[in-house]
Image 1 (tube, rainbow, N blue to C red):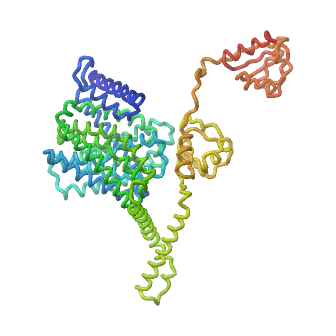
Image 2: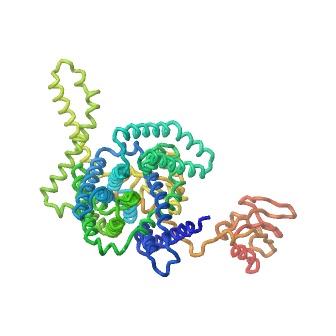
Length: 623
């Protein structure tokens, strides 16, 4: 038994867990910062730490954490999901990620950081923290807001670009002489092999494991497949992270995707903690004084350039002023994938420890500043017309409308080309038919836009709202909840255990874990989401099974129960007890009905709390 390894793992888990809880509970900060701070504490050679964790153990555990993080990312980045996002988030995500990579690399060159280290540093600041942004949206109850969907789409594309950066940088900087003509055929064959496995074999294996009803099989198979493909990828001179990510993408098309995400979540959380603690473990606080100028430059670059580029690109794709401000105000930080990129660079010997410490310090500073920047952007987005000159404001709004027109024309073009009446007019010249078709499409697009303008005050859309396990909404039907009257929303469907209830009846009861498909405007849905996540008030003296028992109570001649039935007495409501049986003249009557009348000398077998049973026993004394 490797006692040192067990000690290292115990120290990492206990320290990271303790500081993560403290940062979340008392400072309302992301868990990630607590994990990193715990790792920093473990790295300090101070007298009150029992031992110092070895770097070998920290690196080994961190590598597993990286692979599981990449596998989890792959589960969210299926090809179908990326295709469903549309072109706008793709343009924004790709453009700003590549430009930030270019800007970050040049900032590194300014501080005499060259080669692959500069490329890694540029890649580090090109991606934002999904975990931090989700936490901020939850805190402001904006997770179901319309701009949040656009924001998550941009993050999805941005993270995809970062993953390809990891693959290219780790492969290019490995130092092995691999020719392009050698690597491309291997890469294509690998992708084809993985695709065939993913479409023909793996879904059947996963479905078979799921049908057994044993969750541990899903955990073992999912993580085993991820680590196995990571090993094969590394043996073929690719990044191990590529293999883990591709396996996640393959499994993202399985019917059991949600179940896989649920069962691997605890394992992923465990090694995520280990990964971020190891990040802090490799951080040297004294480097802040030595590299303060680089840290300040990186922080300024992230906040100014990242927010500015996101604002410009979102306006360019026609997102509108309000949504563009709110989206860009969320992006001024680096996070989990940045640490993955930096960790890969350290593992390859490309990034120096001093540069790595500067990256960690930059991440901590930007994470701490993000909540304040986001709150300011939300206030700014409420009245953008008061800060922008009217001509510029009108120009931006007109431009957004023009982008919508252009998008509608392109989407309708195949339809009109195939089905329009101009297709059947054979005797007109091609030029005439083209002009007629364009004018007809433009007229229709403008009509659609005018319809959208007419319906703009409604501004309603469909949003899935998740019901928490301890939410106050659970256990009640839709009639009693009166959601339409209270929040001006409609529940059009309920998703429950891989089943969807379309147009649920008013008698349908909401249970924990349900996902409500809600139709309404942004304000109404935000209020409903807050209501659905509101937990039931905790009882100051909660009951436990140990406080309940089954007891026999004899009805003496003065007991007030005699001559009355169960319904009349209201034993369930008034005494919080259940009559399970009655012994009458040595005959046991099981499960007595509600109109059962008690007689003298009946022996009642009642289940309830000790306090309630004592009250029933003493009723004949007080009678």
